Length: 81
Image (cartoon, rainbow, N blue to C red; front, side):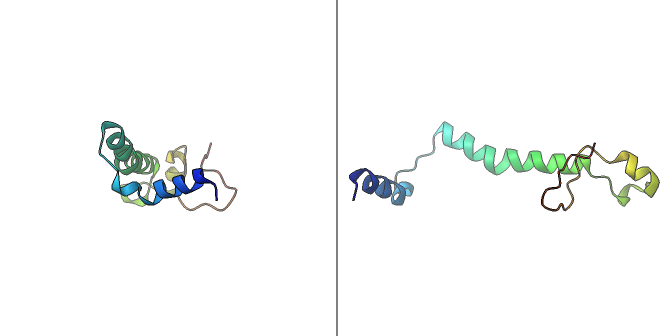
């Protein structure tokens, strides 16, 4: 077997032993665990118009945002303009 592949495999298996929190790893973790989900939640919340606001059904179609975050089928886009 190729020694480079063996070395790569050993590195992958033992990666958790050599992990250190650095500024870079902290920023990446923050981005993937906090910033991205918060951004997606904000996007979904701001573009969602529901019956909670007491708006009639006719007006709802005019107030819906640019993106429709509700269930889609394969091939459908989220853009609604």
